[in-house]
Image (cartoon, rainbow over all chains, first blue to last red; front, top):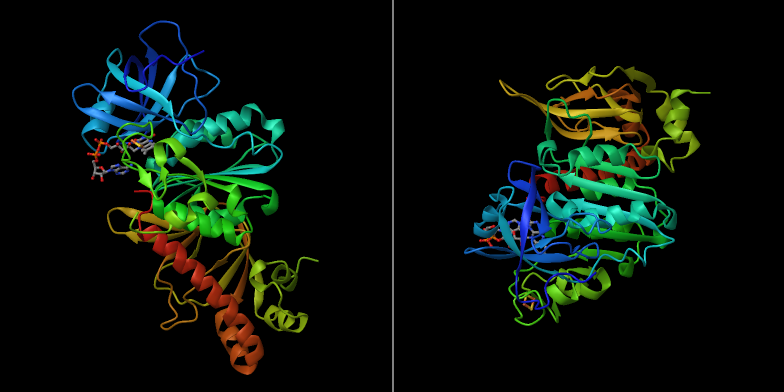
Length: 279
Length: 150
Ligand SMILES: Cc1cc2nc3c(=O)[nH]c(=O)nc-3n(C[C@H](O)[C@H](O)[C@H](O)COP(=O)(O)OP(=O)(O)OC[C@H]3O[C@@H](n4cnc5c(N)ncnc54)[C@H](O)[C@@H]3O)c2cc1C
Ligand code: FES
């Protein structure tokens, strides 16, 4: 089923059908098309440009289940004018959607291999659709491990879902925080350090990594130290965006446009730019 | 048989050590258990023992007056606890508390230091492991301080 926008530069109105609070500043919005029956097809890792009317547009990853196209789900952290406006929307209010855009996670290429899904902070949002996909085709993959880190237990996204994933026999979930008070009985430490606790065969493992730059840099170092091949490490990159279509050049990363060539890249393709501070 | 020496052999910290060295270290090792909630040590106490965790989980905490403890790290199976035992004033700077039932191997610090002085080959083998442990701790703490999920 085609997505609503015939013209990729034209935002299509979607209505907020549910708003859930994840953390103090992060909300998950469920949207439904105002035009009627169309579902919203996308691949895990793709993003939309969300338009808060009268304020502006931001690239936001799709965080819902690709096999449930009847709803469109985004998880948004309020950091500035656009994201604050989006997080302030109430049930029934409308925002504009353009997309989906960008290169997805290589879920098909991962078949037959062990898969490490590694997320830091808000980075779990773009990876959640990949997790849904991997779990819905569980038999196609080897060991499946999620490693997720956040600042504190209060900053963890999808808390209930993490608990239910943890209850599965075929999915190992490692969650860690930088510091914890009170009742937290989980791990306190950092994501790169947890890689040593995951079970995988390095030569037959594909890693999907999303999080802030520092976390991804140290995670990549650790994955390489554990023997993963550079071409089997995938990262989701962030850049400021305008068009989302590879037209304006706003999101340039070396020779690439993150909106069109990414946001998901194999590490070997971007490593020169990934480690260069000036780009 | 589950002896202190056998638990040393199976612990990653001592991987690669010769049987002779393991048996010397085994002399200052004992098996210890901690119930959930029990302290392994508290800030300011003498760092009399150094722990290798065999099973379970331990929280390293800083106690903040009026605000209670904050966990800054957890350590589990295969990890070593106590990176301050080799430095003056030989006191713990943190609290360490078992999160769940924890089995560990405790090594007497004074005997360990004595052994290192007597047998420099063993001392060097131990210091390499200790140095590695410090390097890992250093990396973890710098990343925590960088607030990398920000
Ligand atoms: C491909 C892609 C996918 C993204 N997916 C998501 C998503 O799923 N959920 C989400 O909430 N955001 C996501 N982002 C980031 C989001 O696009 C930006 O946070 C948003 O554009 C900020 O716009 P603003 O007008 O609210 O704030 P701005 O005025 O642009 O920024 C306000 C302040 O926030 C800081 N800031 C900007 N971006 C970020 C950021 N990513 N993290 C922390 N601080 C930031 C700025 O430096 C500035 O200080 C994604 C970005 C890209 C490129
Ligand atoms: S946002 Fe315009 S080229 Fe990428």
